[in-house]
Image 1 (cartoon, one colour):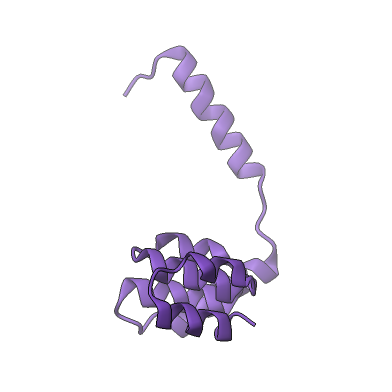
Image 2 (image 1 turned 45 degrees about the vertical axis):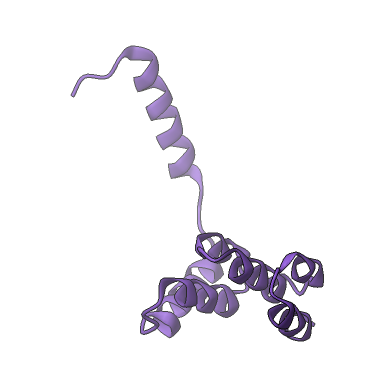
Length: 101
């Protein structure tokens, strides 16, 4: 496939930037252990939450489809109860406040 010249330049610039980024060994190990610990979890939202808790990285919370579940994930991983205030279910909100401490 032949790319238009400006698009081709952007593609090569982007590839060069991505290639220059290095993932630290500890980040790679954390992601690897999260994948191993959570790979048996079938539900995708639960798996994302498992990976977020295992690695301590809230980026896994982004893929959780349920809004309240996503907010709960952010709260627990970041230990920020401010996310809990935006949860609509009253009981889940209380649980969030307990778990996010």
